[in-house]
Amino acid sequence: MSHAPHTIRTALVTGGNRGIGLEACRQLGRAGLDVVLAARDPARGRAAADRLARQGLTVRFEQLDVTDGDSVKACAARLADAGTEVDVLVNNAGVYPTEGFFSLDEETMRRSLDVNLMGAFRTCRAFVPDMVRRGHGRVVNVSSGLGAMTDNVPSPAAYGIAKAALNALTLVVSAAVPASVKVNAVCPGWVRTDMGGSWAPTSVEQGADTVTWLALLPDDGPSGGFFRERRRIPW
Image (tube, rainbow, N blue to C red; front, side):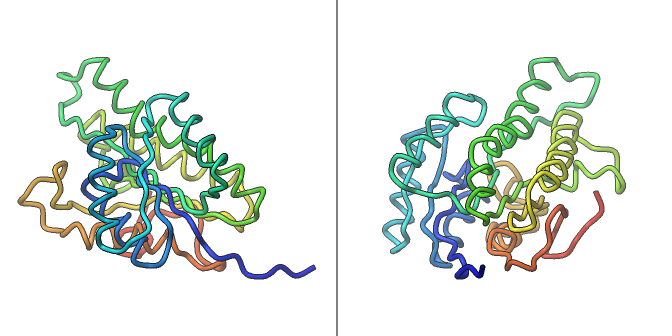
């Protein structure tokens, strides 16, 4: 039985109110997708979504705190009730603690894991089963080369460990889904954002490019990979 090709309709981007997340929303909107700009802070999220909507893009705000399982489930329920099917999930929400290992306290380590790893775990659990059921989906986990195990010791400690774990989650989820759902991780590079700093060498447009590329992969595209500048890099 043949199926008509699926048209990607809706992308949800966590941490979408600034930086790489906001630029990913812009690029995906320009590519013709409906965009759900998800953010923890309603005022900032709405303001960001309104800015993109004024550029002629189909963008709406949804409140979503990736550290709160109930918040993630509530967002998924609101979208389902509205008949919105999430075809693309961009796990972009992140925190960047910079302490060295011996100055790191337990609370900072826990916070890094809660946002950078568990946030993606919660959203994957909420949105990927419907992708599997519909036979189509794209998941993009915004990771970092600072979490790569082969190139360097993951660092700074709390951030690098959490991103290494996010890479492991990427492999686990990609192995748990059929080939019609693509699950990949991306290193955007060192990008000029609030997190990256004004002296970073990469523009936000360049940083988001591979995120957008992975979100729009064709059916024969890769899955279970780690990419920078549209090229596979070592874990």
